[in-house]
Length: 155
Image 1 (tube, one colour):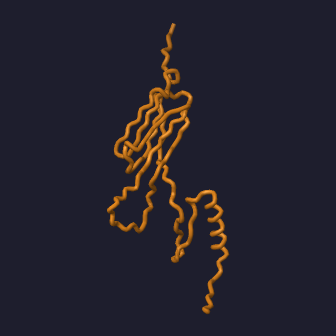
Image 2 (tube, one colour):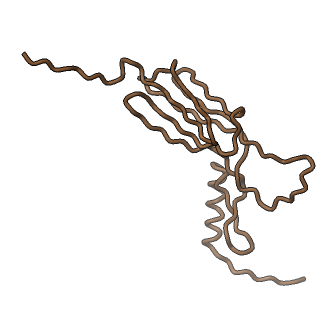
Image 3 (cartoon, helix red, strand yellow):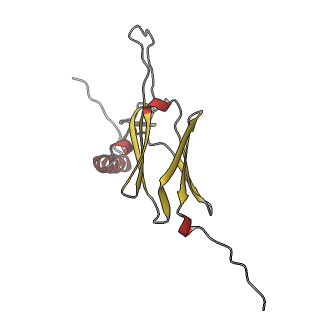
């Protein structure tokens, strides 16, 4: 029987405990220490496309980054004042693929993003364009909500 001594590091135990607790609430945050002491992720993160939302006098604009997503795999819906973008980024692996994957860090799978539309948005005039992995959505403001310039008359 071999005796093995290892140094006790109370901070590492505290960190491991914290990671287990956080992992219960957010599996993507779970980490462990590898043989070299570096942290390594245990769980694959969920992929959520990044968006920019801007506003002008004419309307609202949402730009979403959807790299390696096909136009056919993206759907934009408006219902009950909520705009939803859904889709899927597929992991392309051929049946005859002889590649040996050592690491896959990019996330794949289905995604969904929902946004509450402001009361002044005109949901009947939503326009979506998809080009080069970018989804551009334009939501016009209702005519009543647009600013109007009123001429001041001098008597």
